Image: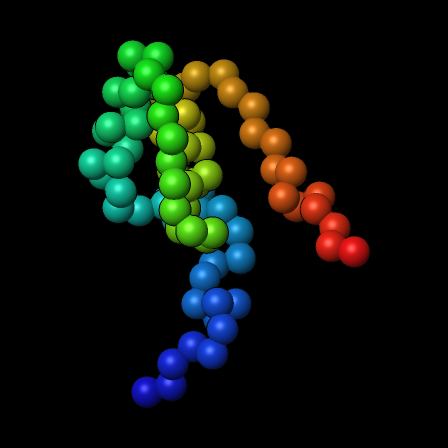
Length: 78
């Protein structure tokens, strides 16, 4: 069995949207309740752990109007 040599081989390359997003049932319920209660919520995890996918999945399911701007994709390292 060969282990992944880098994070590039382990993590997905994009957002997990629609049927590609799975599990996180309790996190979805808690986030939905927080949004409905207008409770400020901080979501913390390392890069590539599905934070944005979680939020987009919940907001899409609630059919609330929202905008998503990905500033990281515009970041250029000099």
